[in-house]
Image (cartoon, rainbow, N blue to C red):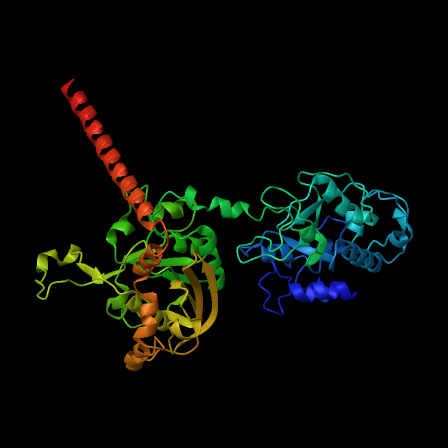
Length: 529
């Protein structure tokens, strides 16, 4: 109907409406049994038991790789109000049930009824869910608004015509149905027109506003907990961490953008504590990582290093090499492109500054021959603009054709993606995803794909074309920490807050010194005894 079409087209994101909370992915019904199964259904389902298509994956399994998905819903109906959504679902039920028992039955608001059950078609989408043995529940999601239990029950009763015969079970039912009432949200995820004031007083004019859309459907995946795996890999549960370890959710998103699979050879040139490389390993990839800081590669011991995180999740050991990314072309022999994906979080000087090989001295003393085998070269500051230029150059060299580079770059509000993102003649920009961190600062997850072979004779030209506006564009990525501090100083109360932070750091240092002195005193007492 007209309202259902409007709700669906708006939610599909045809226009750039930032007030919408999600989009709808449409799979034609003709795909069922051809490209993939619809869902893991009970044994009475002809889709699940078909021998012909038993080797096809189900939609829920396919989408389970998507990190940001909370649930996958088979949409039965949509509308601009709860009532019109219910009408849409009723038409869907009539069409798929191939009989008129839903339309003709007056059940006086009861969900459960066994009348006419024998006339239902065995090929109906509804039929497997309307047996006496199937437990069920209807979850109501009122995005951005709170409704009482009684109000939610009133919404559920709009769908009483479905007449599920099995028992209601609130925990782990066989079938979970969902009713979503969508409202317009602001850029922080809160409702633009809140239902209640801060004092929990109902705002009548906002209450009178209809929802943006309403949806009803069945949650696919047989009760799959979409967040359980993500919690398993939380940074809080890792054996080895550092101040720059990438969040598990974000790093898994990066591996998806890089199309990392069990057949991939993945590379992180700024591996650090290996948080991103671990996510590549979780995708089944073979992993290679390099870093210039030997201390972070060695870790705190055999039980607290990059390898310990891989052992924790029963993954093969990665190949780790101490290497300077600015000298990649000198560290490695010329060879055909090696990596299917390069996924990394380059250092940009906010939590940890970038370093490269070199000395601040004008005259550098040569390393004696007997010390060369274990010599660790001095390092000096590495400009963020050079970090990004070298990263793209290494990716153009080392990626196989069609391989992808995914990296994170910080940016302030004056950053323009069209002119300020670094470019390379061998790489095509595929996606940019922006994540705001504060009013002034955000970061972009950038995905690039190799589309041309690297020509060593053109290296100078490649490097000259990295920044479209030259130094002006490069400066947008440099000195981010200083720019953040300058922006913070403009806010009222900055000096007071800075003084409190200094005092807190001083107290922490003193507490550590005191604990160390007490520990030493205890050791001396034991020795004396």
